Amino acid sequence: MISDPGLERAAATTPFLEARFERKFPDGPSIQAALRLPVGSFSVTALIGPSGCGKTTVLRCLTGLDAPSGGRVTWEAEVWFDEACPTNFSPQQRGIGFLFQEYALFPHLTVSDNIAYGLSRSTAVETGRRVGEMIAMLQLAGLEARYPHELSGGQQQRVALARTVAPRPRLLLLDEPLSALDTPTRVELRRELRHVLTAWGIPTIIVTHDPEEVRTLADQVIVMCDGRIVQQGPVDEVFGNPRDPQVARIIGSE
Amino acid sequence: MHLDWTAVRLTLAVATCTTAILFAAGLPLAAWLARPGRGWRFLIEVVVAMPLVLPPTVLGFYILWATGPRTFVGRWYQALFDSRIPFTFPGVVLASVLYNLPFAVRPFTAALGAVDRRLIEASWCLGVSRPATFRRVTFPLAWKGILAGLVLVFAHAVGEFGVVLMVGGNIPGVTRTLSVAIYEDVQALDYASAARSSLFLLTFAFGIMSLVHALQRNGRLP
Image 1 (spheres, rainbow over the protein chains, first blue to last red):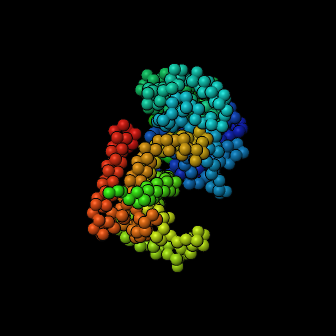
Image 2 (image 1 turned 90 degrees about the vertical axis):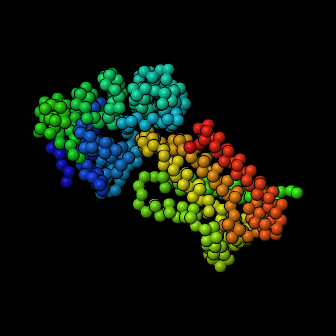
Image 3 (image 1 turned 120 degrees about the horizontal axis):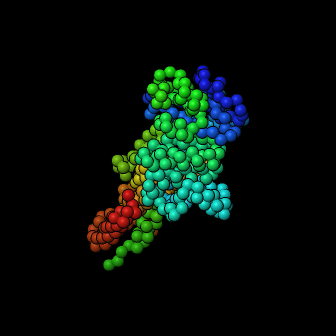
């Protein structure tokens, strides 16, 4: 059975995203995750760990892009994945916004069309208004007709974020959103990102291996190592009291 | 001194039908083959690729054997259309489709498989269904390779000989395509007719390859 001592210490408010699952790989170590995140109000949870520890796999299992080998994932009363039932909601059914590490912008669509892509069920007027909101908030004015290859890394990141948030997802998953940027742009966008995440108020899980990003962006932190969650809790608590030297190394406290 | 225009029209009709059928049927097959995860899918890939190495006569023989009047397929077709498959226009098209299968499916699969998987997954995560993702992301990014496959299939179907002769025979206006006509003209020592038809196909092949080359130079084909 997958167990995690941090699970019991998670906030007691409802509703929750609850996930206890395992993902096995034929040619590598398995990934085990046990998360219980309050999602009724805005919070940013950072998932930190060294490269290859399974952070992205956890996100992909939450989105439905990968199916866990076993376990259960629920959102409030909704069962997204259950090995026993069996149930496995598609990414389209889960209503999650997933920002890919390399942004994955559609190269054949302009900035406006990229942002409007997930709004196909809205009317043209609603779509135009929503795209306008996103462009204003993420300072993309003047770039509407450009294609992704005509944008800088920072601009691409903003467009990808706008596209992900435009359909109003109920949970936002960001996979190392700043890792592909140079340091000055990363520092600038880190501040902006916290600002827009607070403004949108969407519960967010952000994958990173940068402790500074955790301190700047997150309220809670989950520390992963070798495919296991080794500690989780409020950022100040985990950074102030790492469970062991391994966690201290990962969060840069040693 | 004139070209056998009946054979030309029939040849173009066979090539057009072959291209249309392989576009409609080959694209879903290629989309399935291009999906990640291998498993036993390689068996289908091997079967699709077999006409590349199989003598046309062998494929033609098996088509004749499988669609003959004593087989289930033959009886079913006879009952439904009051006709037979061998030595008819549909039979020639069937043979051409099967023989050209790899010339369509392999470029289609390569083009669809070259589309960045993350773009497809990003579309799903934005709530867009799989068919709509194919229409809005995969196809627009893969159309150059798909067009290349279609041009290749059309050109190849125009010049098809062995399997068409096996399954269709040599019935003027029904199954006698241009390449079959050349063969018959040579057999009958009518070299002038054979030369005219050959020149037509040579010019056609040169035109098609020039078109492909021009499209490639303009960056519109891979």
